Every structure is written in C-alpha cells, then in structure tokens.
Amino acid sequence: MNLSIRNKPLKSWKTSGDCHIFQVLNRRSNSYLIVAPSGNILVDTGKESSFSKLRQNIENLNSNNPGIDKLILTHAHFDHCENAFVLQKQENCQIYISEAEAEYAVAGCTPMPKGTILPTRFIIGLGKLLKLKSIPFKPFVPDVIVKADTDLSSSGVNIRLINTPGHSAGSLSVIIDNEIAIAGDAVFGIFFNSVFPPFGDNVKEVVNSWGKLLQTGCHTFLPGHGKAISRELLQRELDHFSRKLKKVN
Image (cartoon, rainbow, N blue to C red; front, side, top):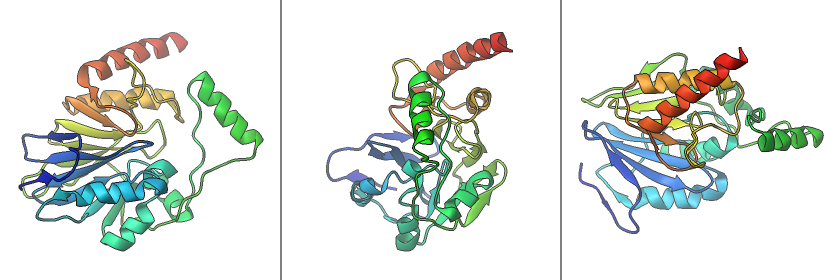
C-alpha cells in the first residue's frame, strides 16, 4: 500500500509484515492508525477537543482505504474513548473493548483510577472531596467484547489483542507482528527514564503486564501518553519494580 503525507510528517513505524503505524494524535493523549493490507485500525481516539486534529491527520494520509475499519480502545477512560461515539456513527467501524470495561462504554462514564504516586494520590483525593466520581463521555455500544487474548490476524497480517490490566481492569494492548506494541496506559512515556503510570488501579498487575508485553518479543512500545519506549527501558523498569514489590511482600 503506497502512502504519502501531505503536510507535516507524522511519527510512524513499519513492521516486517508491511504494517504502517502512524501517530495521529500526540497531545493530551496519543492515538495510532495501523495501516495494513487488510484495512485500517485506529487505536484510541483522544479527547473530544482533539477530534478535528484526529480527523485531519487521518485524512492527510493518502491510501487506498482512507476510512477506519476497526476501532480498538485500550481502555474506557474518557481521554482515550471520548470520540468513539462520533467515529462509530461516521465510519460504521467495529469497536473493540475489553469485557471488563464494556459496561462503562454503554454507561458513558468510568470510575476514576487510583493515584500511584503522591501528586496523583492528592489529585484523586481532592476529586473525592469534590464528589467527582467519574468524567462522563458520550456513551456507545461496542461491537466486539474482548474476553481473552484475541487474534485479529488476516491476509498475512499478524495483529493480536492481549489483556494488560493494572492501569485499569480491562486494559488491552495491540501487538503488531510481534515487533511493535500499542500499550495504552500500561506504560507511560512522559517521564525521563521511567514508564510507571501515575494512575493505576493495581500496581502489581501493572508490573505483571510489563512482563507479558516483553514476552511478545516486541522491541518498541507505544504508550497512551508521551514518547515511544524501548524494550531495554521496559525491561529495566520490570526488574526494578519486581524487586521493589518483593521487598514489600
């Protein structure tokens, strides 16, 4: 599939299986478009305020199929799924979400996550004092409920969904050709030399999910926020937090 980008080049990655991954949002939250011979897959949608930029960047990609065939949500926090409702209407795309978070999509709200570090614990505590239990978004009905690790491979393209809970109970990661993982908020790329998420419901599950991501063999991990993460950094973080958890237990 021949691609060109008319305006400013978007960050992109390519796998040996001829999948192109383009970062079509990179501000408040990241969003990625997987362009494969079998069709286009959008991973996460960003906030409603980012919709125009998301749409513009996708349209600036010239391809044989400019539409969105599938929308995969790494989890149901508002900053990742706030545009799911409108994309479902406009694109008639299939929406994939974890079984653990499908009810939140239908309800249009997700419980606030826990803080994992002192500043975010303070923020969440303040939210509780203000009786802020969730941040609402336009509800939508998912098409595919992901109950277990799921193979989406077709036409020679190797794409899998794996459960990587911890940040939230239903967090998913997208594994492309066992080379690149779009990991949502299982990892963060906003801090120097760290991938630890500042928000998360279960730290032990976060660390276990890092191990699962490394087991895929991927060399690059694309986060829901911030810059791409190397395998070496993720391995160091896994080793560090594994030792830390053992001391606690």
